[in-house]
Image (cartoon, rainbow, N blue to C red; front, side, top):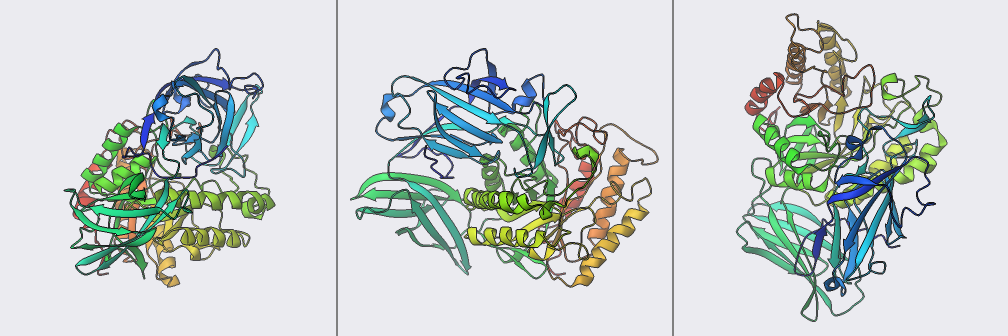
Length: 610
């Protein structure tokens, strides 16, 4: 049962072939968790068709089902693949999976938003039909990421209360591949960059599956968009010197092709090809510097959420979303509140969108909000509970490492978000945060800035952990969840108070708004600009942006949300969260044109000299 632990995206090269297993699988719910006992890993009887990738919730009657579920696909594996290692790779199964090949368990994985793979060479029958079976589970607990709890409703049916405000979509949500690769392989690579006048340096390091063969050698080559060789080097680590390099940025998202070749006495053993962007990212004082120049973030919090697909990878929808973002003048988004599918980062690299990359680190607080599934009674603060440190912290650390290992080579990724709206009010949170932030800086070769989001009115006076962030990120809803009402004067006072407190703290760090917004029912208008109307949403954003412009250290605005999205049912939600500036099917609300006017007029280096 070998987990290959390689996060390299599947690519066809001279030595590797990838076979997509996307399409129709067989599916069955297992509410009694008796499937394995009944040998469903051998044959999934009385099943129904299910598309992969997609969330099964969109295709069953009991859409908020909680518990075990099963997928099955029968595949004939060619004899031509016999000479190589055969790996099965899942882009994501939410939230945990056990994989069987021909009835034999080959591995397990925990974590619903990251890829995982298993070497199945010894389990398949080459030249014959094979049965691939997956037992999944979508339950949540205090020690899962994201967090939640299981309960039984009045009818005795198991349900999940998520401690987060988005729907607990589940299933094989991302693509599945069979990968044929050599026995000795390139397992991973990392890059860092130096900009030195007319020359740019690409520092690289390579990890191999086996490196004890003295005859093995490595060559790394870099090609421009016209496929001209611009630099090459030999060895497990080295430097590629590029003259007059095209630096990657949202205005010019130039990508180079990197080709890594492993040879044995001049015979090609393995080859991996990828695309990188030469750019640097750092924080200096209250500025975020991209390629040494100040950058102002304009954009969104988002969700992987679309009709029929749920949280399943929907590339057509994602391409439309990127088009709309660029059309509006946006340059960034946050992967709220989990790592997105790998193809989305590839699109961001190509199109030129900056990403604050957030792991599934949401729900790390004891909740008092009934609409998020809480009982309303707080018995013990989140980080005061022993299992937070003994069980959740080690898992959180591993998830940070996995996130960075997967996404570290994307030029679009400029920042790591390590928590969303955690409890930061207790001393017990401090050592937990310290360890997580240390893990991120130690794991990232590029040493990107680190952040997390503070919610409500958490600030300088009542947060014990804000000092760990390189960039202060605020989720604020003055005028909606607090100081609510048609008259936004109280909201203006509170937002000014908040920002003045940060100003007077002399922290000398950039501050960005990662959430602010108001639910808006599409088509609802109000002469008086009442809450939930298009007019209220327009006035709300106009107020926030006017105040943002008054504070030089505010270096970004990522509103909540790009589009309406599905949530758990509750009295605060009508068919989901309606804070989108687009509807769930991507039709614009009136605010879209106000934002387009603002963002297309603000240069990417806005406030550079302030």
